[in-house]
Image (cartoon, rainbow, N blue to C red; front, side, top):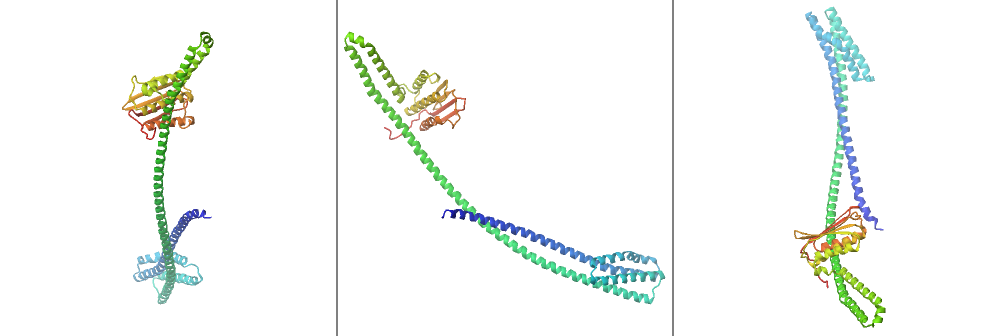
Length: 458
């Protein structure tokens, strides 16, 4: 029942990180939205201020145009020069446009409609009065008094419109200010939340990095421990393999000695007894048993030859008596006699000084390689070479057999592993070159003075 707990505990930080990232993303999006909303509201407030300024400008322009027109007519009446009428004529042309702009600014609301109609009629009446004064060339007292009243009323209406526009602008400004304050509060809150989440994420990531460093340290220490254990086990296995190899060679040597001493003595005694028996028989009896006696002598010779081959296979006597070069030459010649392969020998003319263990290792490698060339490669031609250069001995066995791809010749792996191990026992190098249809070449290189020392071997 407790098995799912570690997995649940491992999933919780991942879900927490995802939740924090989602919240952080939401806060950032809200922050961007609030900023965009505030920018839009600010632009709208600026647009409202611009429009308010335009409205006030139109109202002031209306009053200024009427005053300029009135002053221009008054100057004309006083001086009689029509040059003074240029502002009047110009304002007369633009008065209707200014009234239309004011009407558009204020809008056709019920509250403004009556005032706008009154303003239009007053402006029209004012302009008509001024036009009549220009035509008559003089302004009566009644016209002047009526003009002052209409001007005062127009000013009063325009000031009322300006007050309404100012009140509307003030209200818009207050709303914009309130909106900005709320937006600032929202943006500040979102920013604080985003900073808080960032701090939490930073702490979580720092904790995660610390855990990763701890895990990396644990993995490194575990890998070092495992490497040391593997090296120790490899060394133990290598020592065991060396011990078994040397024990096997020692056992072969013991069997070879026993076969040579005991079986050889028995076979020699048997042959001598057979000859003695044949000499003791009468002439007629010996003639009758001559065929059987000859067959017995032949069988004893064959058994002695078999014993010699078995002893040579177990422990080649030529290694100690004649040396490595002569032993390899005899091995190659015997190999060529026993089968249909052609063996090319590339051996030194004189024998070489080689440590007994190294000589035995090279001999066994050559023996195994020749056996593989016949049994697995089905070779027709084999080259056996021994070279000495730069204080090293290099044994090469090459064949023209079917070859194989390295790592796939499972039938040869144990033999190859034995060769490699023998070379490693002598602190040497082992190289294998082979490809399907291209034959196989084995090169074993060891120091010429190499000697493997193993304790505990009888």
